[in-house]
Image (tube, rainbow, N blue to C red):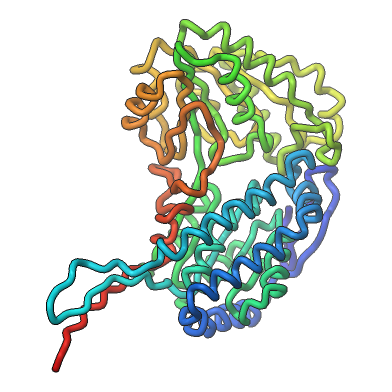
Length: 467
């Protein structure tokens, strides 16, 4: 991906070719989009909820109907193996369905106990114009988290997708048009970072939903300046897994390694730190290495490939630098790179999987988000040390505990500084549960009934009866 003076260019991580080009909008075009979104607010807000739900459901259906095309485009734009790409389209449909079904209850008025002579209730009012800024790593799943509930709640939406995955936004716009959404209710803009900053600062924008890096979140906050609009920030992670002494080791190893390697590790909730009880250390490490060696690195268009390239050559270089720094400091890798030589020759954006041991507590591989198919494994003495190490991070998105004792998992989870606590699962979003982070992993939340609370504001009605 490259942003030039007047256009964006998408470089496919599959083979390094220019996949497509799109012009950047002029100031007048951005102004027209924001004006249309603001003008459509009132009519869409007063459209009955059942009609909004029906219209958005039709938009989702029109989008998902192109599943095969969407999956192929996803692979070409960001490198997800075609074996896995269709599942993101399915996940889009599943999350949308849950949020649509939750809407009537989540958006219902809150009515306090009756009081003679008064009618009182709290209404969930839409913010107005919602600017959705979505990333490339899960371009459909991150977008649906905000778009569907924002529209259903009565907001109008302007979507600016990552410059790496512009086709995702365009296909959503086509689906909105096919569903007959009114003009101005859902629009798409390709834009540069300075243009996005100006939109964030524009008084016609009432809420910003951003998913991306910590640095990107800071840029959004800075662009808000003196404005007091609410901003939802879903940022990075350095998510830990803890394997207790009583864990099912084969099950834990297979699933944790999948949490490390799926999507080439390019997930905010990927497993990036593994802590293992000393009593089962050797057995777990052996099982984890065997699991990692079963992943097939290669061209993501090949149905046999399970591990594709990372999104850009620069990202691959940064990942390799972190691994090399750790090795130079005394760590050692457990996965033999030799079998991946042919796949690595396909381009600098291909990175072999790696599990490392012997890491120091301050090594970057244990401190900073890697966003690649590599992970460190650390031996711990028990629950107390594992808890301290899991919390020793500036991130707090998810943490997973692998154990047969769910009471122990819950007890540990209540002391974890994280938005989601998993037991015997990882790297997964349940749309019935709120997706949220603490510390540098962001603020606000999406999905579940509570997701509607962030995309609306409370408005109280206090009506005194007369006569």
